[in-house]
Every structure is written in structure tokens, then in C-alpha cells.
Length: 443
Image 1 (tube, rainbow, N blue to C red):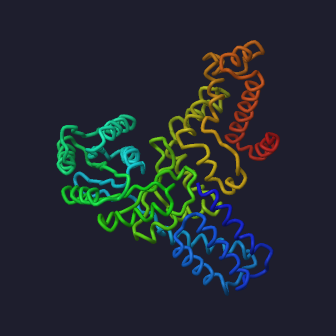
Image 2: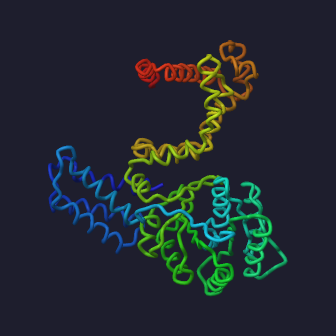
Image 3: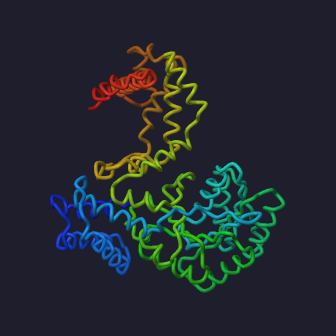
């Protein structure tokens, strides 16, 4: 996500490195490169020009503190302006009414139906929410089936009626069904088209008037760049929607939509889709996104994802096992499962500061743990709980059963033993020894 833009912005900032102060000449050269980077990312020309003018205006005449270099100061100015351009503050979904109704809109292929499921799953995780998905696409029977599949995946009920061909009646019936069956949130998945047309706009406007949703969200494929912004404007002119959802931000997107859509429609980006899995949904934080665009990572989001998967009771059990030297491969496997639930490995690593540049060109496989899991699953329960009994004969059997080599089995055992010692030291307060061990573990 934003790899190309991040690289070009980094090169633009490089112009100021080595300079002792910010001058009109060197800042003009830098902002010219920034504008070029934004245009290459498919940001609207007018917005790119206004953005760089603001950056230039704020940068010229700034006194560079002794603790900062000109490049660092300009990076902060660019980060602040990017944050402001993308909305400033995060804005979550408003759940008003009983039930609260959320109307989804967007073109066909934008990921609207899948995102409806993701949003239902997200709201369901808030414990007090019991969402209902309503299928209002009367033109594609496959869309109704798809919503049922999505609902089944996330454990959320779906209301549909293939005999009813009036989407307005379907939406009203869905809301009535929610009231009768204790659903406090209704997410209405409407029909999409291949292009904006009058019939589509009239239909969704009629649904909105009939069910008066607390939130109308416009779902747009971030990979369509400036076209996404133009489509959003067309929808907003008719619907006056409340917020934008950007899907497919995990793909090879240039980022122009994320950066400029707020300025064009004056509506916040509320959510982003970051992958194919049903939990790949994030609230959009402009400041965190600006950090990621500038290669600063997003440690806050990484910690939040970890906390969502953190099981306090499980952690206590593992602590006791570590203290008694009983930490085994079953416990190791459970830790791997928690990490996998946090999202794709590429996305997680991308949240670490500087990781994008360090991993440029590398293909990070989401199945990075696959061979480790295969090795562990090839062990007997006794071997998993007591790895010290693994002799040459057992290792050979495990390698054959997991489709790996004895060297890979040995490598896993070595890493497991190092990790076990490290965890024991952390419990015992042996910070100095742990740092020494980490140095030894470096390849």
C-alpha cells in the first residue's frame, strides 16, 4: 500500500538533507518533487498544487531547531498537511435509531457486499451489537447468494426474499424483520451498476427515503484512483452520503483516492478494507495513514490489533508454564494462531517504522507460518509438550510427515529453544542477558 508514493516522497525529502537551513530555493525544489509524487499517485492536480503551496508557505521562514534537520522539519510539515487533507480526525460509524440502519452504496465490483459482511463482523465484535444483513440487489441473484455466504462466514443473520423485486419494499421488510427479531443494527446491501446511471441513483435515493438510515456509506475501490473520486462526487451529489469506505487498500494502489477524496466530496473516510479476510477492516485514522505514507509505520494500529487478539487468561496460563519450564509446542502454536488473526504479514510488517523501505521488492507470503505449523502438527502430543525427547529418529519422522527437511526441523527447534529462554529471562527480569541473546540470534 502506497509503496510507490512513499518512495517518491522520501526522494523528495532527500533534496533538503545535508542543508543547514530551509531556503526558498531548496524548499521550492522539494515541493516540486512532492507535487510530482502526488500527481503520479493519481491525486487531483488542483489538490496537489494547493497542498504543496501550503507546505511551501509553512516551510519558508521556519527556524530549524538544533535538534532537527531541515528534512525532518519538512517531513513533519508534510505529515501534518497530509493528515489535514485526509480529514484530520478519525470518524467512526454513527449508530442512531432502533434499529440503527446503515445503507451501503457503490458501483458493482467495489467490494460493497463483502464489506457489508466485514462491517457486520466488526460491529458484532462490539458485544452489544446484533447486526442483520439485508439483501436488496434484485438484479443479480448471485449477489443475494453471496451475501448469505458472507453472513454465514461471520455468523450474522441475512434477510432476503428472491420473490420480491422491489428493493424499497425489501429494505422496509428487512428493517421490520430486524425489529421483530432483536437486531439492533441493519446493514442494507444495495445493487451496484457498472457505471453511474439515473435509474441506479433514483433507486438508492428511494431506499434512503423509505428507511431513513442513520448512516449512508459510499464504498469505493481504492485501486481505481481518480475515477473513484469522480464516482464519489456523482453519488454524493444525489445521496449526500455520510462517509466513504475505501476497499482494496492492500492491493497495488497508488493512493490518490485516499488522499484527495475528502477534499472533493467534503465527507470523511470512515473505514478501509485491508485484505480479503472478513476481519480485514480498520477505522480510518488520517494521522496514522499519513505516517504510513511517509514510511513512519503505524505502531499504534499494530498494538491495537495485538490487544484485540490478546487472551488474558491464556497469557496467565503460559506465564505459569514458562516459570515451570513447561512451555511446549502446543503453546507456541496458539501464539502463532493469534498472530495470524491480526492480519496479513505484509500489512503487519508495513506498520513497523522503516519496514517498507527495508522490505522493498520482497514478496512476503501470508503462509509464512505454514511449514512451522506442518512440523508441529507432525509431532505426537508427547513430543509437543516435551520437545527435549526429539532425537534423530523422531526428527526424521517429523520431517517426512510435514514435507520438510531435517534441517528445517532443527532450525525450528533452535528458534523455539531460544524463544523459550528469552521468555524465561523476561519473567525473571534478566534484561541484560536477553539483549545479549538477541544479539546472538541475529543472522
